[in-house]
Length: 519
Image (cartoon, rainbow, N blue to C red; front, side):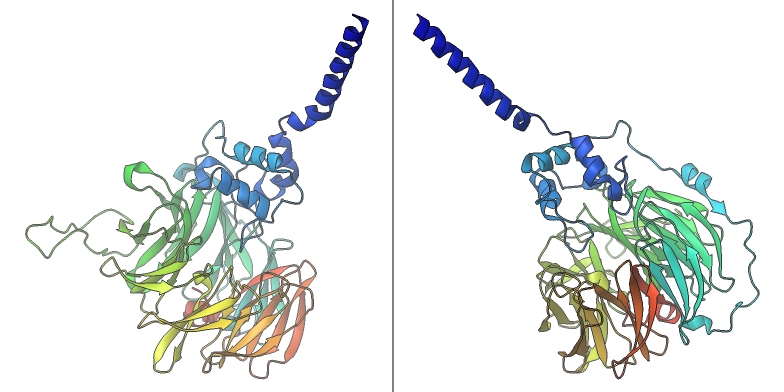
């Protein structure tokens, strides 16, 4: 009997020890606390986005469950999203994923009235009758400094800093210039759009066009600005004159399924904006001109007749065979080359007829938004870096065949050139060789030199001066710089200290649609 009691006591003690040892491991991780510690700095405490996108069901799209856990653990290519596999246990990653999939108590909305109420025009702004500086206004280059959220205004001849103005938090996507080059508009990830007068070197004002936004596009006539939003899932049209909101277009597909807008692009010959959608196999074209084209069928009496709309900013929805959330256009803006960031192929869409006309071999997650073109052997080629593969694809834009795959020292993000230089410049943004910059001969399609301007530091993004004589390269660090190179000799000319300079944008190259830069 005594032996039996002792055994029971020992058993009870053993159970207690096991429970004590396993109790904490079995406890559910505090997902909200984990998010606050590891995620809120980029995505905000309310999950509505900051330097990173909003993390709520409405903006996660198709990324749920294992796919979301994979991103949290491994990070995401071509973004600032680092992986947490070495910081968080699998059960903590899963808890955060479930937390992000939980809807907010109230779905955020941002109406025309909300946006217009946010509009803030500077009372100190006075438009100058002529530039207040002696520099060539067509050779001004803007440098976005993400380290402390400013833009530096450079004289493109002397590289003197003419002004440095504060921007909204976390500028994202390239600034857009008015057709005359006088005004520039910048957008932040949290939806603020700021207008700046280059002639006067003054901020004109700002408006919040969305809650979490991707980029902006300028209409060919300079009257309208389109803002692509992740949250709400809309396209916002602003009047460039006074930043007034003209229209908010809900982006939905069949059955009312919403989609985030990955990006919006201008197509000046078409008098339209073209939208890349993150969650729908469609391409949208939004017309801003006074005479939008008729829609429907007009060539066959058996079909519905064409309809001329009186709606302002009418939308044309073009079905495609795959989700295409990254675009490139030919110089005529007839053909759109699209690819999914998760896919391994590119599609060519003829915008005139609204049909896919070719498929392009583009493995390795091409970054089409950074593609460039140049004449080569009697044709025009497009070159694009890859975000996963250490290569650059060079595509014949007549046959849509790959003419060469240029092997690089790692996956790249940006590629740039100029019509007056024989070279294309491509960074190696990802991996151990992030401090390298490849120089490619546009005639031979060979790498002729690899620059190493700051060993161990991220080297990225190139912009040229108006005449193409100098190339500006970023040392993408908080204690970074813009390095000015002679575009012919490839020798360094000057260094300008900057706070994490990212993109650089020359007025003339942008408003003239220079083939070597993005539009």
